[in-house]
Image (cartoon, rainbow, N blue to C red; front, side):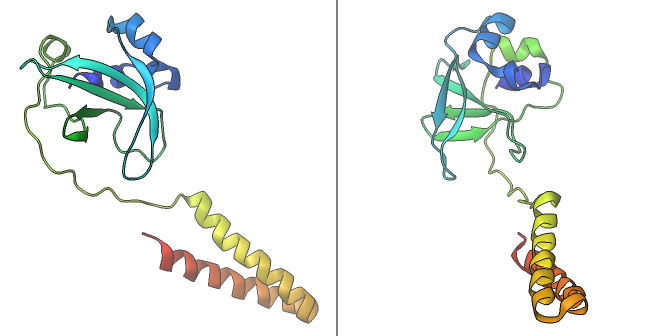
Length: 162
């Protein structure tokens, strides 16, 4: 499960390239690849590892994505699993003998719309209302249309938010 140390040391986008991993950590065989998930393929760096019990597996470090709740995943014959380190785990323990200590189901992550998208929904609706109101009723119609469009956009945003 040592991949978290890769990400924890450097958060830059180029920190997880196969070349950087080999240069900084001495791990060879890493390569870039796409991994299939239920939400579509994810591009990232694949690092082959051998667990303490001799099984072969891979660590998958996705390219940085804003909404990704995990920095590293573990891939074995059972699929792709998010990595979480135990409390007080040292770097030496991780590199010497990585092991799967326990498997738990992953709690659902909250999917939240960014404030930029919310502003675009509300602002776009207000803009459309302004245009329609201006055509229908001049300056006063533009003000009424902007208000109605903004309120309508807010209601749509709140109704479709997860």
